[in-house]
Each structure stands twice: as C-alpha cells, then as structure tokens.
Image 1 (cartoon, rainbow, N blue to C red):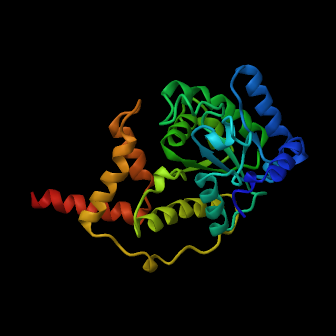
Image 2 (spheres, one colour):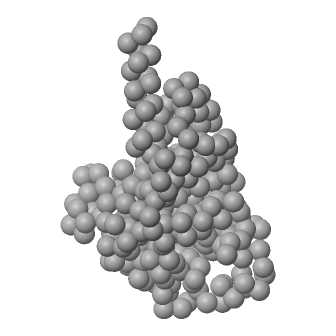
Image 3 (tube, rainbow, N blue to C red):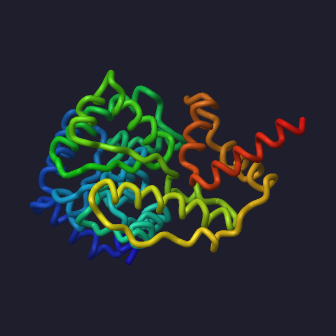
Length: 281
C-alpha cells in the first residue's frame, strides 16, 4: 500500500509509536538535532521501518513538504501522501526490499524545503555530514547507501572522502550507489524513457541489496525496454539536464552526477552516440 499517511488514523498511530525499540535510537537523534538547531524541524522515522535492523540507507536531499512541512506528516515514510514517496514504495516492492531492511534519511535532515526547493548549497551539504555519521554509528548493520539525486550524491561523495569519513566508511565496508531522485519532476519523461529510468533506480537497489547480503527480486528483462535512437537519447538527456543546471552547483558537476545515475546500458549507448557524432563532424 502507498499514501497511507493521508489517513489521519494511520498517521496518528505512526506518530504515537515513534519511541518503539526499532526506531527509538534514530528518533532520539532527531530530537537532538532539533535541539541543536532550534526553530528547524527534523521529521521522525516512521515506526513501520525497522531502522535497528536496516542494512540499507536510502539517502535523499532534505525533507519534503509532505514530511516536514506545515501540512506534512512529521515523519519520513514511503507512505507519505506524495508521488515521490509512493514511487519509492513501488521501487522497494519491485526489488523485494522490506521495511525491516531499509531506513530513509536526508543529506540535510532539517526541514528547509521552502527556502531551498531546488537544491542545497554546499554549506548545508557539509552541515549534514556529522548527522549522517551519527546515524550510521547508531546503526552498525547498514552496509549500503543508495543516494537519490544530486544533493545526496554530493553528500555521499564528501562523506566518503579521505578528508571526512573515508577511513570510517572503508573500515565498516560501506558502499554507495548514486541514482535518480524519486520526485515527480525527475520522472517527467515519456515512455519508454520513464520505464528505463525507473529500472535504473531499481538496479541500484538490487546492487545495494547484494552488497548487504540480501537477494533481490529478478530485474526486468532488458529486451522488454524499447531502445531509443541516438537523437532521442540526446534529446532526453537535454530535457532532463536543463532543469537541474540553475543553482549553486556548476554545470559540470550536475552533468557528471546525471551521467553516473544513468543505467549502464543507456550511458554506454549515449557515449557511443556522442562519439559517432564527433567522428562524423
């Protein structure tokens, strides 16, 4: 099921249970983070997750309006009443992930969506790294991080750098996968592009599951996805990249993050197409 937070009874039940053992530690961390930055909320982790037993961390940018906003649930949950959460739930079901195996978090856990709706500046990415380290300390079973979108990609890259927590990540065998955000904007695509993009996210989770010792459900047969022509690949890349380029991060960084989040089959075909164009010019 998805979007169950739209039901006040379900939402109230989840909020009443935020001190249950499986989420007690992480929600105490949320309390501490709110005390350290008064005036900014940090959504709690919904108790339908088994955070204490999680082996995968799903990392996004910052809490959206349906989680931390005035009309939000106050919880990070795949059951929130928005398209991004619903899509995340569908992905988990597609790959065979259960709530006991995964926990959500944000590169910047405080709610700042209204002031930063199009991405986080570098200083906020940096400010969120310590909170991420504290979360990982509380959950030693986490072995894989799936980073959704450019902000999460930057967060993971900085976290795992030698200047920050690279040695820590290496010592506990942490590995990260960069993939597309699950927001509606990230999936404003026509078919078969939308199916290809969704399968790319699923494949990142399958790899993360294998690294964490889980067995994912089988992937969609690649033959079922219609391949795009070279011009279609270029047009799709342009349409997806242009909305991402304005903002604090330079175009080269955004483009690099976009390419790394592509399914391998598509990125290879796009490279071939661009090389052929270059050779023909």
